[in-house]
Amino acid sequence: MTSELCYLPEEVSQDEIIEEINAEAFGPGRFARTASRIREQGPHDPALSFVCLDDGVVIASVRLTPVWAGEAAGHMLGPLAVRPSHKNRGVGRKLVRISVDAAARAGSEVVILIGDAPYYGPLGFKPIVPPTLLLPGPVDPRRILADPLVDGVEAKLVGMMRFRA
Ligand SMILES: CC(C)(COP(=O)(O)OP(=O)(O)OC[C@H]1O[C@@H](n2cnc3c(N)ncnc32)[C@H](O)[C@@H]1OP(=O)(O)O)[C@@H](O)C(=O)NCCC(=O)NCCS
Image 1 (cartoon, rainbow, N blue to C red):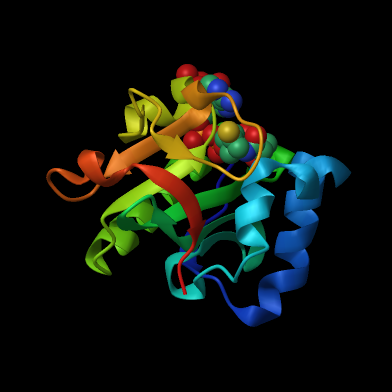
Image 2 (cartoon, rainbow, N blue to C red):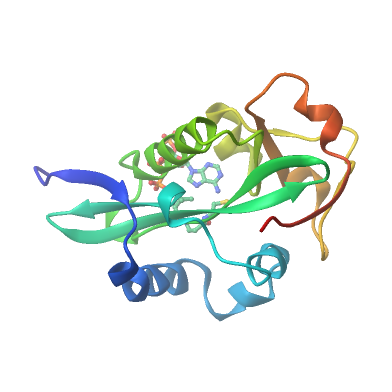
């Protein structure tokens, strides 16, 4: 495939297609997920949320939401979704790297997500051991993954994760 992929911060006009991509990836149950309990507390940060475009058409999205991760001022990553037509071309990995780098530049202390360790581990995310970070809903603690962006932030990952205004 010779198409040109391009990565940019998301724009308001892309809301609808991003919603479509997330619906395709996660289905109608997505609003019942524990991560949605946090996302419904407040909006994601568009400056730290990115899309991948193929010939100008959005084919993947990642969003970051500002959170208190216990006592750490961080961000929650998700949803991350790539159109089935564009999977396994490194788009997901690139979106994670770009958004985490942007969060680090913006002074975030940690990026947290709920996801698969085999995918996110090589990207710098690891489980919080012991699992001191609480979420507003059921979640397997082995799926709560953190990418520390400042030294010593692990000690602050104690308590509830909630939207950070
Ligand atoms: C998961 C997802 C974002 C990956 O995006 P992608 O652009 O296809 O992934 P990449 O090209 O960056 O990486 C592909 C690699 O990740 C692996 N991979 C994909 N999903 C994985 C998962 N859940 N667990 C472990 N490995 C996974 C692929 O097998 C592939 O491995 P390889 O490089 O050894 O061949 C995409 O498949 C998707 O949108 N899935 C549905 C939504 C979802 O589950 N999102 C959250 C993930 S927890």
